[in-house]
Image 1 (cartoon, rainbow, N blue to C red):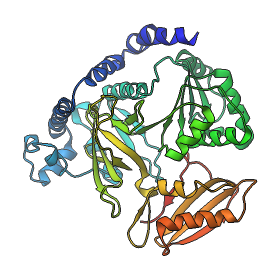
Image 2 (tube, rainbow, N blue to C red):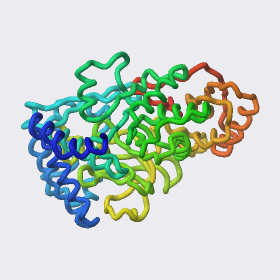
Image 3 (cartoon, helix red, strand yellow):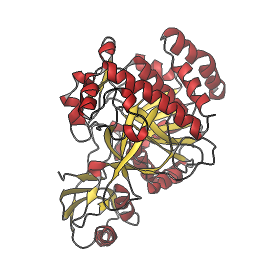
Image 4 (tube, one colour):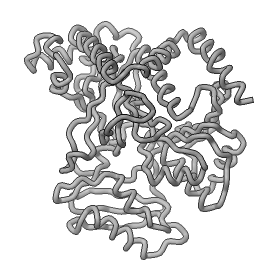
Length: 447
């Protein structure tokens, strides 16, 4: 039945709903973005620059903040920004700047009908921002294009292990998700005691695609392996909302018997990059966004760099050169899939989640993950840095925990942080997820 419903949904039901009932242009934008994949790298860069030039003219004419700050930089007209190197010298945006200049960042000719959203605020500082209807529809189109690179398609049986509100879903929501051929499982209600219920839900729904926060699907994979439980095998699992580390990917693939894919986005822009079938890096949606990799962290020139994003289609509250707090490592070369979109080798986490050592070295979360690879007897861990010379390491012990595990982890961490950082191990019954269902492996409280 599912094999018949999926093409019916894509070709008939969804177009009737999206274009006819809702009056949205999502499918038109999706067709446009799919055509862009036939362009070579030079043509894609030319397309991106044309879109950026249009955005710059709009900001100069309609957005008071940019006209004022650019004038302070000696810019007399948008034509003074002649190329991407000029653009990269413009002041970057961060959350405090947006809050301080909120009204001046809204375009004068777009105030009516502007939509608003608030980020969860991983640093405890929520951010409100505006966007246009066109921008939202284009973001949906880009999401579906990126997901399709792994083989995911509209109308497929898709299970979401996601941020469903605690409590029963409303009947209207259940009908809506049923029409889209998807089933929602709440990541917020997952616990060790209820894990069998989640496994049963997989078997009942029999998904072709799973879209999940990384931490909950990893937790479920650990439970399946530990309990020898087999569940219905999906065709693919897409990790979202946080970085899927290679050790976590291997764990998921062992438990579910299917490939796992990395995606990268943030609430301000939705999908920024995604892996294709080759999984050799994440393709950047450069025909929709302009993404820069800025300053590196620490002394590794080839290592992670801060991500700076510009939405090329949000004319309502344009966020130009927005520093979202994430870090990424640039990819090298071209993917064998033939798509000319540039690659990120990896997304390396939040800047505030990056740890440091007294001698100036950068310790990304990936290193912490690898330090725990051979550590049995630990269900969960978290490393918090409050001082430059000390890590607080909280462990949630499992039934087979032995004190030797602490020595093992300490020795592995020493390989990365050296001898000048005190390692303070402590134990807890649980480490709570964030309000958005994420697990923080590393937390930096350094200013």
